[in-house]
Length: 341
Ligand code: WQD
Image (cartoon, rainbow, N blue to C red):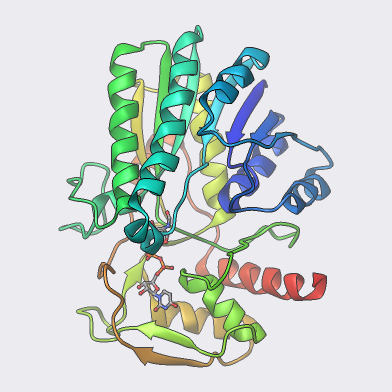
């Protein structure tokens, strides 16, 4: 099947994708600087697939190291690039850290891929590029609006860099996957989301509240123009999201892509409100969640959920797991973390 480089492969989505790549018979090399992950994740992956990926621990901002890596690994048939900083709020406080960390490594990797006879590149993008879309569900043709944060801007700029490079590099084939809201954990509870510090995202905050790490969940606003007043998002199980990366990579390797730069929305196609997510958690865990209604969070969009027709029809991929599946796996993972500590 061939050797795949997964940057950020010890991260939340990266580790789940490594498992699915190995399940499909690919050999995986991970580059991760461990700035937002743990070396224990390597054991987690191995305990699931019984195959230990090659792991190289260095910072992709170190251009000579990136060049040296590609000199050694000339047999790479594909790259999935997850490594990036992803906290929206932090990006507002530290824009240069985000521009340097999310753009420079992308450029260095593309420069190496341009040298190869043929290369296949999957980019971790985000529905953030759409901002608050005018029409729902959101299709890939929705206008790209001015980013709401430096983080979102790095995803928009990243897509533009890849598109422009593909225009002059017929040997380079790329797909940008625009994730909606990844949640949940692998059914084995060997890998999952490991937020550092106070979780910014809804689902880890819910499970940490339920397990007693956090006092109470604040629901950021219930006065939005939505059926129950809380914001709507498209929550996709991280395993479904991981499988979408494998399918996208196989599309490029098998040369069934129609253009050498394509974008796909990766979501369930269903929107769920914050209160619906809480109800899902209570249903699958059998326990009430301690939450209160608080003020709106600056920068939040009202509603976003994917039109997944393109991924369904052209990738032959569709999310199979439900919100309850995802919440149940997230809860089991949180309980496993407590057991391990
Ligand atoms: C979801 C909803 C909050 C926490 C972000 C990034 C996006 C992607 C996923 C990287 C919102 C509400 C949250 C809480 C709450 N990250 N909420 N109380 O903001 O949709 O997306 O993470 O790619 O790029 O923007 O996800 O989980 O932070 O929030 O009420 O304690 O939950 O207001 O409506 P978001 P989120």
